[in-house]
Amino acid sequence: MKSLFKNLLAPRIEYETDVERIDFPLAHEWLRNTYWSKGISRNRVEQGFRASTAVVSAYVGGQMKGIARCISDTTRFGYITDVYVAEESRGRGVAQGMLRNLMQRPALRSTEYWYLITRDAHEVYRKLEFQTFDKPERLMRLDKRR
Image (cartoon, rainbow, N blue to C red; front, side, top):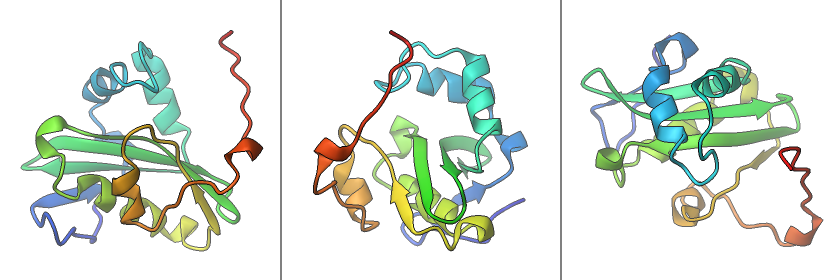
């Protein structure tokens, strides 16, 4: 299903919410080279997107230029992850457009708290009113890879 949302900063960008439209070989190539998913298998990339509450991909001229997904209980929290924009399309509002698209999906509109983790894109997300945690020591994780 094509989104009616058009990013004002990049009007030629189309956003797609159908997981079947995602070019998984390309998504895998992108994510396996990121700091957060280094070496991830193609199967795990596809499984993660297919199991997500919502996904969005961005296209310019029919070519995929970005991906993002959300895991949510659709009421209290939404965790945005695997946000990736092709290098040649960065700085054009693609990531912001994808996040706006995800957060405005009907099933997610009433979600109260949105979370994401980033090492280097804080300014991108601040434009969408994301803030750093005031008490990061409260965050915990379990790494089952060890």
